[in-house]
Amino acid sequence: MAPAAQAAWEPTKAVEFVVPAGTGGGADQMARLIQGVVIKYKLMKEPMIVVNKSGGAGAEGFLDVKGSKGDPHKLVVTLSNLFTTPLATGVPFNWRDMTPVSMMALDNFVLWVNAETPYQTAKQYLDATKAAGPSKMKMGGTGSKQEDQILTVGIEKATGTKFIYVPFKGGGEVAVQLVGKHIDSTVNNPIEAVAQWRAGQLRALCVFDDKRMPYKAKITDKQSWYDVPTCKEAGVPTTYTMLRGVFMAPGVTKEQTDFYVNLLKKVRETPEWKDYMEKGAFNQTSMTGDDYVKWLGKAENDHRELMKEAGFMAK
View 1 (cartoon, rainbow, N blue to C red):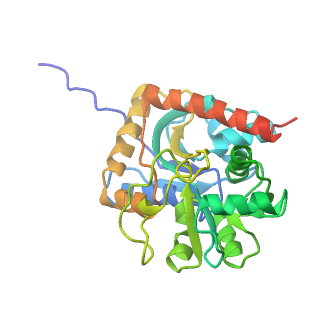
View 2: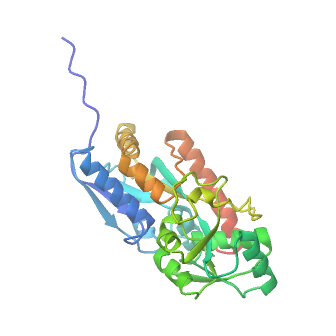
View 3: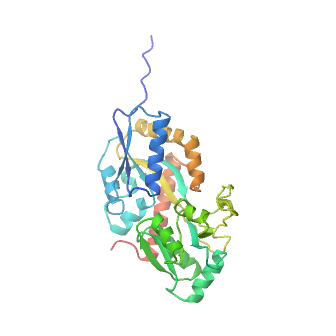
């Protein structure tokens, strides 16, 4: 009689899902959604526990996972601080210190202004910024030397403008500051400003992606995400999207990695995930394996170039 086929690997205790950022932000929302879907559809026998480790611009979370060599019961959700934090702070960490599992999506960035301003297009706003002269218009964003400020430098480089960059703690606060006209513009992610857009307080000028967002359901009384032009179409040749990905600790087996690759594939097939993607107007590109590793290498190089030009590299 043939020996019974050995069962594939699965977790034998609770899985810790590390968020290298605070509660309520995009990475935290995504981790908690995945956790909820895993529980609802019983995709795993063991529980999944979300743990926020935001110290040092996310370095605390990454170093925790890097130091958990061979532990298959630990995952981390990443954003672009995967690249920016080590480059800006010199903390001894690189994405290659972990095991890539899956790119879940890419997060978009949109150029926003207050709806009461006269600017109807990105070109009108940037022309006005240029006419005002250097360091007159204020661009609000989350954190310093992170995505929002890097993207702001990219806009300046592409258009010959110069902003005063004003850092805040999170995207929610950034949107509120723009509604209150304490700043002139932001590059918030869709999910961070959608409530104020729907309420008619903010205006979306363009999206920093290669193509328009595919979502055609109306969000405001007049516009869907699809109606927002790309910044390229609007005469601002700058693109930037942010990784939303999942990694494991270093030194885990292929069989252990495959378990989570399959788990996350099942998560992406649920209606809850599809609804979340549409609400946040995400770019739904997903990758695993060699494609994901290649993408990560290129993204790291892109961030290094942008940060070098901006003078954001750790001395």
